[in-house]
Image 1 (cartoon, each protein chain N blue to C red):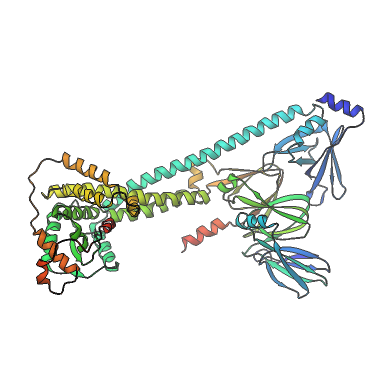
Image 2 (tube, chains in turn purple, blue):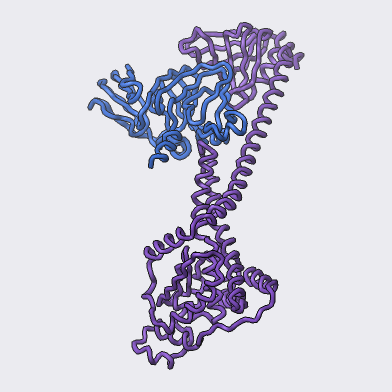
Length: 416
Length: 217
């Protein structure tokens, strides 16, 4: 290549190339200006729009690669008073060519240095992202464990106050039923299970609400709400007891409280650790918070299923009502699209059946005592109530069919 | 055109005395008051696509206002937040401005939006930034005071404090110290800038304001 250059020069037809760039020099007002750089026979020549010109002979050239893109070539004179630079992609090659090999070594070492820096930069960025992920993931698991432990050490009276306040504030979907023919059989199930609650100090207070909604929930502290729709939809006292035990387990395992502390804890811990939460951090934090709330309650549902089975077994109630309840849900709803919302926070029916059945199989055999209630009477009484029959004494003539209940509402059983 | 930056540094505003035939381009909504002899024209901030890019990615307005006059007059321009403003005279060179810093410029200045790269996002400065080039004066602002540093070697700036830098400045995002001190010093990540060239810094950062406000809500 140098040969070509010399030939061209000897013939006097050496074509100068121009590159746009800039200059730093103390004599310029503001110390800088944009320039056109020409590569001449023995030197670089840069001229500003105002007519100033700067010259650097090739043998004096001190090269450096840098700038924002990492691809800008700087060229300084011997005393470093003049700095010319250009970001033009062709500039390094053209400069090497014009200098006839005098700058090749410098250019090669600068290029390899720039390459090394950009590789280090990429490794750092990758390492940073990976480290952030590791910190967030371990935080996520750490806080889950930590929040659970903290929650278990709080007094149960806190749960009770929380639950009572929540119950007051919640919209009721119907009027409360005080008819002892309805409340007493359910109360008897609650009482049998309450004796075997995992936590002492729970105050299981039953409210039966006249509503077609197929739902039941137990608030922190033990405020238990059963909708008449659930009683109509259940096929056996065992299934009803299964739902009640599952909901009571949410309260005794103190899921409401640990969910609150986890959500608060994750946000607090992330902002505490990563002082100035920049864009990516905030987004990741949000993502993990959302993920924790979802997968978290799925885990809680499984825990409540198993704790429910344990309570049923301990109370000498046949726990097979639990898997049979999930069979019912599966048959009625299969994989209906509207089940999606529920499925996202609840494990699928098949795995709930499997897990509860496995647990039942692993429990020691025990003589189960039947649930002491008149199932048909309860159902017809409820059917009478929920169809608003004026004369409740005739209710025994009514069909006990759960005709008022849309089976799809079974999906609404929520895990609060 | 005579320009004067007044009420420095907290509530700096730019007072321009336009001579007949002068014109100036300013960020939308930047005009505070002006003589009735000045005409205002609103135009796309570049082309339509460029304007959209500047609006959504560069933190600038979709439209800019061009003020011109046949008779001369006074025009006062401000920025939306408290802080200092400064003037930069371009002579064929260029400068990158962080999103939202641009206030006004003379007609010879070209405004372009450019991809700043992932490192600037990690550094908390935004994915895109404005490039001003050409000939003429540019006025831009900062939150808090503005420092100007001519750097020949490396300089460390906390994220969110860099307002403007020349293309000749190399920017790397790095940790403030070791892993422990980076996470627990509250400094987190910093940007390492490398000369030659000039950088403009602001004495306050919006992230800092947001965090402080958050703590008092």
